[in-house]
Length: 140
Image 1 (spheres, rainbow, N blue to C red):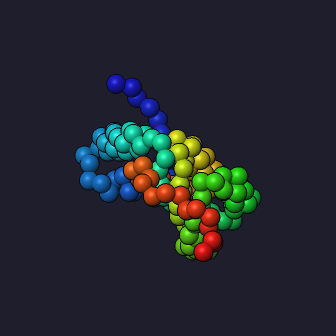
Image 2: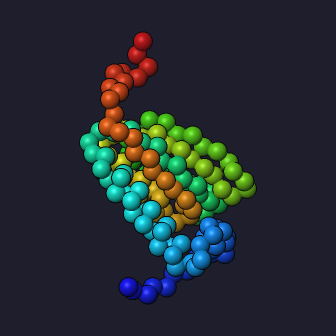
């Protein structure tokens, strides 16, 4: 077994302590196992799929809203719709519906979640999309 050192902010540590484990190490081990299993499950989705990317970010963080907007414009072929909610004076929640290749969506979502100032992020990959892409939006 390896000993590692991690740094958690006070609020996150209170959440870990609130899980009711006898010690923090076992809580962190179980959380890591659960996260690894979630990632393994998500990686099983391949090929065309539909996904939801939800993330919270600090809109006061220098240039972050612009970087996020630019990233979505650069991947306009994946983006179907986005919901934007102001949570408080600093935090915004965005939920983006994406459609495309699962590995491309995963890569894009990881880049969004890795942006400095993005506080939380979760990608939900749905089973391969059985819904055909719309043929000519706005035609009708």
